[in-house]
Length: 220
Ligand SMILES: C[S@@+](CC[C@H](N)C(=O)[O-])C[C@H]1O[C@@H](n2cnc3c(N)ncnc32)[C@H](O)[C@@H]1O
Image (cartoon, rainbow, N blue to C red; front, top):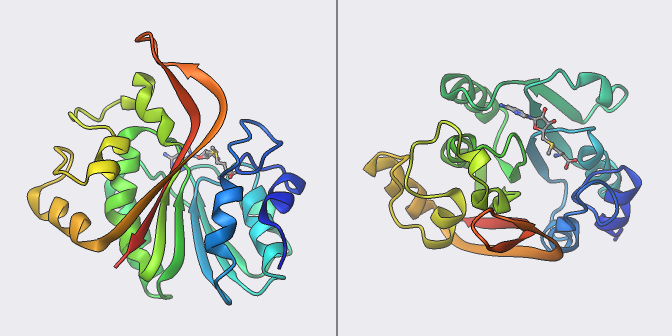
């Protein structure tokens, strides 16, 4: 089995340990990813396409990858028949619903990763709709939850809870209706939080927080 972090560093995604913010999430994901055979993986937020290419090589091409971005990223994947790109603004609920309903026609996913704008309301929208695409026993991953400490990412969310608070407690969140809260609560088997102990950021409230936090939600 290959080493996911090495491939993430090779393809320059910040999920590895060397490039950009060097979140190091790949160190942790490797434990989950190594158990899949011919997985279907979806990522929201493409960046330079490095993670999609790393995952493709990790499975020797024996996987199906979908990815979504607000920008047209299709050129990154020319020549990769098993990597499919969809352009969508994942902050627009109606567009997300349409993409999810189209994707459901081709089947569910082993893993869905949310790594888009990191705005809290976009993360809440993704958790509600894209989570529905995960197979029983699969994982919904909500990345960069350290942005829950940064008010700049609260734009437009008008809620009392941050995404990090919600996934940590699964107490009802004011972003959702009670039926949506129940649906999410009932669908989650467990939540594991991973934080890389790298450079700290200042929240502006005299506290420091870890710059790299991700949540892995196991779906029932
Ligand atoms: C942090 S980068 C993704 C990094 C990439 N996943 C990786 O691991 O290397 C965030 C991406 O989200 C995209 N993005 C920003 N706002 C978005 C939105 N509203 N809908 C969809 N994608 C968005 C950006 O264009 C950018 O490519």
